[in-house]
Amino acid sequence: MDRVRDLASKKAAVIFTKSSCCMCHSIKTLFYELGASPAIHELDQDANGREIEWALRALGCNPSVPAVFIGGRYVGSAKDVISLHVDGSLKQMLIDARAIWF
Image (cartoon, rainbow, N blue to C red; front, side):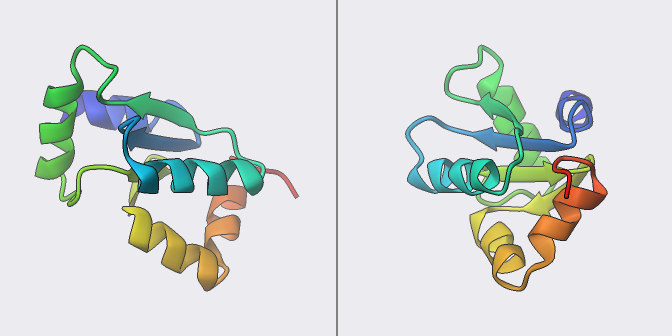
């Protein structure tokens, strides 16, 4: 869990994904379209990916990917991020965390 917290706090926006996950791709695309450049950790490409995935689940990430952190805080999975985007608060969260500037 410490590794996940450490990785999640290194950049303003961090997304834990798997390269074969279509929802992960959608969330990454959304962040890029909003002007953010998140740190992306592809768990299926990482030697410690399984351990990170278990740590994400222990932190309450279910499903484990995509797991989105903004400002070092767990925001949620794809449905949570999409809900934040629809209600307009995702962009403000990214601005507050200095992941984007406007």
